[in-house]
Length: 297
Image (tube, rainbow, N blue to C red; front, side, top):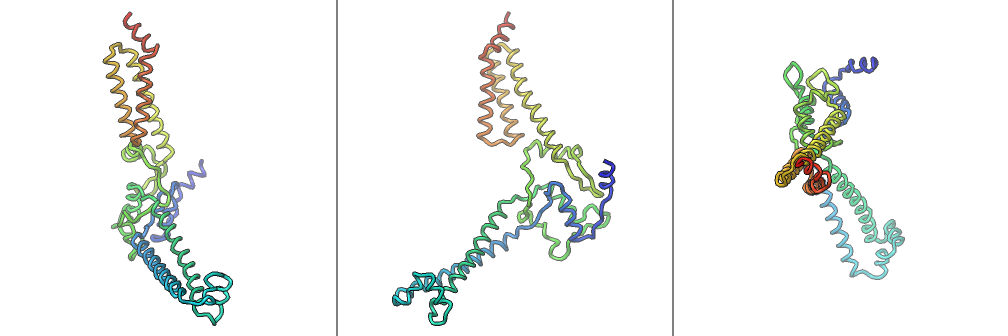
């Protein structure tokens, strides 16, 4: 512990610019600060160029095949046998086969480049945008908003605007999707989950501690809704009131799932059906009847 405390107390000062920004990005334990531009416009144009190049190569190949319809049997041997095409294409006597072989290699290389670009772009588009609070903290750090002097971008030149377009940013490691309770605690009770502070207004939250608190609250709410409903149904003897209690507790349960936990529609229906079934079974079972007869006696 003393060694860790001593290590944490020492903070290396990096030169403002690429060194300091890289150190900040790498300092996050959860790596949520690995935020970069996607360059969607450039990527789209590059793919369009590659696509057009392939269209032209395809047209050249179609033109050669159209000419082959008027060629002799000897000239068409290269269209049926790869060894002949390769041999003729490497020589100087068969100009058409030379052109055809060069076209084969060019198409193969361009197709490889095009498909790799498609796969890479598909992978990039599947990455999520950074969380708003993470992006806000990143921008404050990038603009040196916590300094005593006037704020200025860490990177100069045209790179000073790399964070301006939020829709063009991507995080390499997406944070887990927060439900409303987690977002609420992260926003309004962040001080209780601070893991590490810096010499600025920036602080790192403990995701592990936050998850434990959220899980504990969910367990408490679930136990309250279940055992509270059972206790109320046990104490109440009137059938109409019992039906009202079942409806009320089921509605409260559904609201917790839909509003707090962000459960999907089919998950809410399934969970509510199971929850109401437990209450109905309790009411119609021996324990519910025993409680009612005992109160009547």
